[in-house]
Amino acid sequence: NALYCGRLHPAKGIMDLVDFMSFMVKEKPDFKMGILGDGDAETKNKFLSKIQELGLQDNFVHFGFIEGKKKGDLLRNCGFYLSLSYDESFGHAILEALACNKPVVAYDLPVYREVFGKYIVNGQLKLFKKKDYNSMINFILKKENGRLKFNNQLKDYSWETICRKELKNFYYEVKTCL
Image 1 (cartoon, helix red, strand yellow):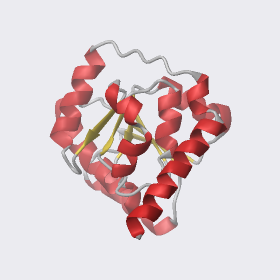
Image 2 (cartoon, one colour; image 1 turned 90 degrees about the vertical axis):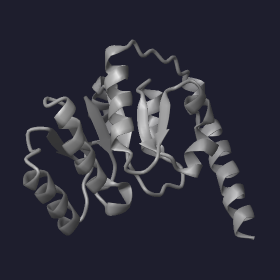
Image 3 (tube, helix red, strand yellow; image 1 turned 180 degrees about the horizontal axis):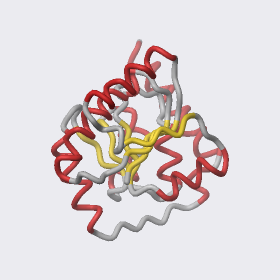
Image 4 (cartoon, one colour; image 1 turned 90 degrees about the horizontal axis):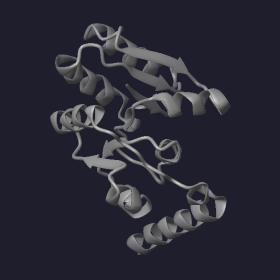
């Protein structure tokens, strides 16, 4: 149903993913969350232990670190991409999900509004307050039953386009620090 791709690290909101799932399974017990990525042993153990403590082991599939075609196949076949990161400089994993024409649910970070405005406007990227699990769940369950079609173009993901966005974001960060 949903996929997360990234480092297993507290700043990436991985413990929030477990909390989110504890609420989601109350509404949809068979909902699955795929996890692409790895992290240090201590964080990974805390993450997996929390899943076990809450009895969610059947709702999570941990793929570990995957890249290339297999990663693309997983992204293309998920229903939603979920990012509960607390801090990002760009959001490359979100960009990959958008490129695969997947709806993305994420915490409302300022960088997303700067970089992904087009996708917020067209409804492909939906931003929520941190830990607003009920609103996220309501959105996902409504959208699962609806027809979601996005038609992103390859030119949206050219290196030139990405570099322009990165440079704009860099200038903004420098300007706000002065």
